[in-house]
Amino acid sequence: MTYFYDYFARQYREGRNGSLITAPAAMFGNIGPEDVRSCRLVLKNAYANYRMGRNVEELRRLIGEYREYVSCCHDGQAKNGYNAFIYRYMLEIPVGSRAIAAKLGVTKETVFNYVNRCFDEMLVLCMGVPAVGKPPGHREDAVRMLVDGSTLFSSMAGDYVLCLFPGKRERAAVEQGRRATIRIMGQLGEAVEAYSGYCNDGYSSIDTDIRKAEILRKCIAGISPAAIAEEYGCCQSTVYADIRENEKRLAAMLFSIGGE
Image 1 (cartoon, helix red, strand yellow):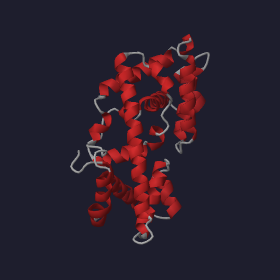
Image 2 (cartoon, rainbow, N blue to C red; image 1 turned 90 degrees about the horizontal axis):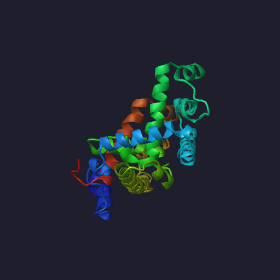
Image 3 (tube, rainbow, N blue to C red; image 1 turned 90 degrees about the vertical axis):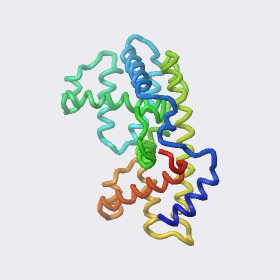
Image 4 (tube, rainbow, N blue to C red; image 1 turned 45 degrees about the vertical axis):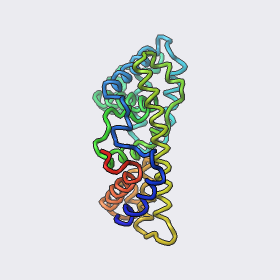
């Protein structure tokens, strides 16, 4: 880590002077949790009015893009959640929560959790990173948020979603969040590429650094630590240790020194 901080990370930061993230809170701009709650309510009401013929095309496109995201998830519950949402909002005749629970073999409370998760994730598709609701307190936490949500943040829906947020306040929050997310994910992508090059340098790389870069790629792809540990034939604690080290190193590349 001493070498990394003193040389590689410092050179990386100096090469991007003026384009670093000043602090985790800066990723959200002036979008607060109350703005996110308001946008979520607008999105929920839009789907509640789907059967009334309002914004039908846009809502279908959004649920279609969400389906594409779900199809790539390694989490089986995501597919159950998508099905619960379709039963609840998209069929011509609505299906009650009790009937949905029976179809999926889960409890009624689980159905509510499924549907809420769908709204949370579709809001991320609409407005990006700020839809998380509250900025992380520390740089490493911010990197963890970006890596864990990378697939969703990178799958942002098209500009057509703006018509789903007609209110001035909500539309401004969505537009700002989309711009910020495109910028942040571009910065993350550049940092990951540079970090991978550092870890795989033919002259100075070591096996553990090569493994760290590979694990980072797998985490970005949404593969769980348990699956990664099984693939490498190591214990999960080793994988988590590499994940935490990756977060520290990427934080040193993405953020201005001292930014919290």
